[in-house]
Figure 1: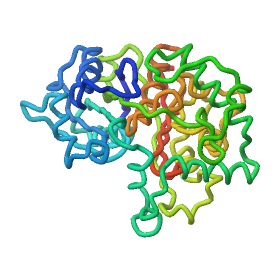
Figure 2 (figure 1 turned 180 degrees about the vertical axis):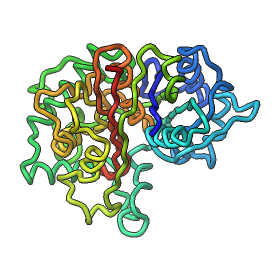
Figure 3 (figure 1 turned 90 degrees about the vertical axis):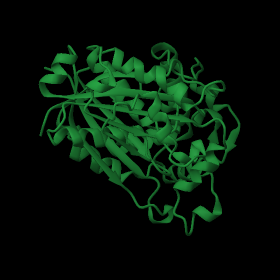
Figure 4 (figure 1 turned 120 degrees about the horizontal axis):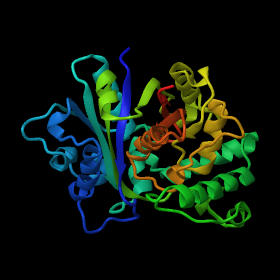
Length: 354
């Protein structure tokens, strides 16, 4: 296997509830430019470009083609796209780099969720025969999972409130890019009225418009571009059944398997960046991945502080890589999820040079 690393990372400054005066291309351009400028590169220096987004949010078929204008596709570039979170675009770029035909790859993701009704749009992820026609919105499905986890005794509402308070407090302290940041106690969060089912508003992620981009490089090229590359030492992606009724919603076996295959348990982890849009998601993931009670989890604030669809998973990789490149951590776990109730999970181990 070739050594592949994340060597630059940029994101929206800051992420916002609604970017009203810019279209997707205009929102994306400063981010892609920043990721390349960090390395003094242009898109013509990149061997492969891959993006993550969804036409359902844009309301236009093949909308990702137009956003290539934000990258610069002329002269022609080698390009691909996934209708998934940008973390899966990173996975495709990593595979491409393993083939040995290129030494650099550019990955980006973006979304403008604000123009539509995001929880309803996300019903299109459900199976089209039994669940999809019922139009159960994404927050209601998350509430069903939270209720199942509470009934099974694997999470508590107090623990959920602790996650909500800690995440927004960490975002206030550590992440100027975050959309939702505040310093409130877990008791204040716990006192909130229920929003949907057992979920309070603070248990839910914000709706966010935003983008992220990064450059991957292999071997010596990564060392040329970065003083301290964030090496991807292991990466794996697993999927649980699409049908909600076929799954135990109190467990995340796909995340557990992906973590084992990626080598998460081979050595201690300094920081965990988990893509957990709802508070109970983090608690279920911690249980599935074997995260220690005293672990540093989502010091960026995670998806509870900024949740641009199809981008929040890639942000977890970028935030983990940034901590390694800065020397704040030497081994990190980055996680991304997609689909209803943590259905699909991608896990990677990032390390700095010893």
